[in-house]
Length: 250
Image 1 (tube, rainbow, N blue to C red):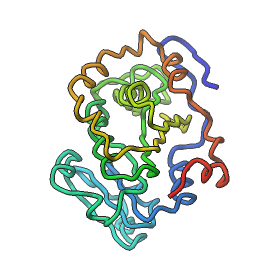
Image 2: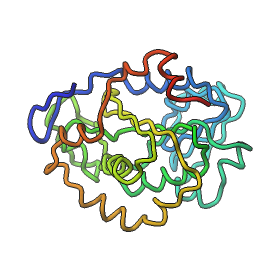
Image 3: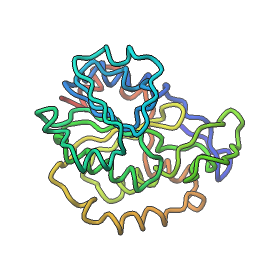
Image 4: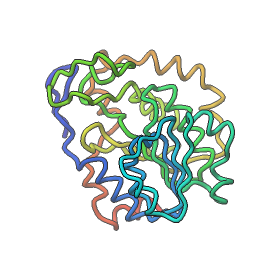
């Protein structure tokens, strides 16, 4: 249970670290392919052992061995919008995307495009994981990364941007999706399945949805109120392969 400290801050998430949760998802789901947006240093890409597409405008790999752990590593050093405008992930894999991780630009309108573009390349039972949508204090939700002064000193550098708005929009506007919000440390992890690759609702209503997202006021609804609407659960709910495979299947 998340305990509110004030209207603009809550305690740290109590779940396992998101990197460990991603490791668990890869190990238990064992997807045949994986797509990632926002790779940067390659730490999350390294978790994949299957055919993988990584998209980032500025790769900064710390260790070149990151590319040696899977049979195919396709790196697209460009913005995700440019990737989806010029490439077809489904065609590249010769099948739908099975597992995806979205951790690109931390602005709600960018994530909305990344989500509907990824969903269109997926299958109904594919899994899309989304990072940084459950901020624990309001300063980290700034749309600009520079100049953030955290309320809690140990949270320096925790920039989520306003992608929480995208998670809330999906919860409110796409009740057909199976959305699981988890208290993964430090800024949460959203897992989405029951996808509809044929749906054009988000794309067709993009401008109105962006306007709606930007009207969401976290100070007004409070972080606690937002978490309650997202129905955050403990990461322990998928700590066993039995529980995980009962929810997801590839």
